[in-house]
Amino acid sequence: MSIWLLTKEGTPPVGDLDEKGSAFWVSQVAPRGLDEPYDPAEEKDWVDDLADEEALWEEWQGYAKSHERPLRSCRDVIEFMIELGLLERGSGDVRWRAVSPLPHVEDVLPLNAERKEIESQIRWRQSFHEVNEAITAWLAQRRPPGAAESEIETSIQAIAADLGYDPEDVRHGLAILFDEDIRCDVDPETAASEAPLRIRIDWELFVEWRTVYRVARPGEDSGH
Image (cartoon, rainbow, N blue to C red; front, top):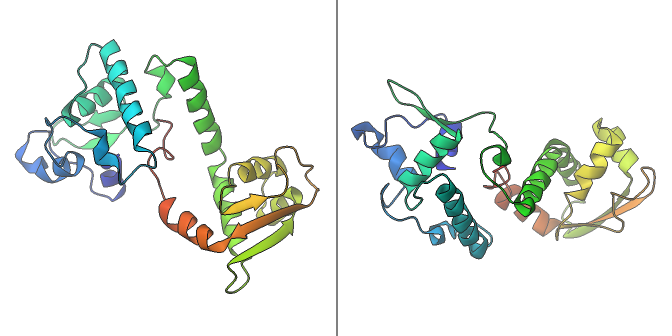
């Protein structure tokens, strides 16, 4: 994730792992050093559930074991990512980048049925990310000045007409939009396209969640 962010900022990591000129980007990826044992607890400021992060790290150690690889340090992680075809290291003036497009995780790792279903659901949700973002912006424009909460009555068909999307895409975009800040009186997956929807919005949570904590969160930008 650190390598991906550095690349997005326009400064692709340059220099091999132990090369003198690579000190900056290596320190961003591995603040305690490439060979220090990795501790999932270090991610506590980035994740919602540390127990899930620790379980995921244990799961990845199992995948590495199936490849007869150790997985203890950041160096191990980087080398494993190269082997799986997730990360590329250019020759000569070494420049690092995440492979694009990334392969599906089940194409490079021996996933069980439960993990395959989870990955499938992640990809399904991501396929409606654009319409989800468009609906979020559409809702934001309808906030009454100064309102802490408000209700919007509309329909799938009306939103689709306003935004220029297929109603079925809007249906799924709404389904993955709802949370504690945005609620609806019916399930958009089963509602008729022309049926009225009453969407209730807590604007304080909406502003906090949709503009701060949910911007490019790790795990939402990739099928991994």
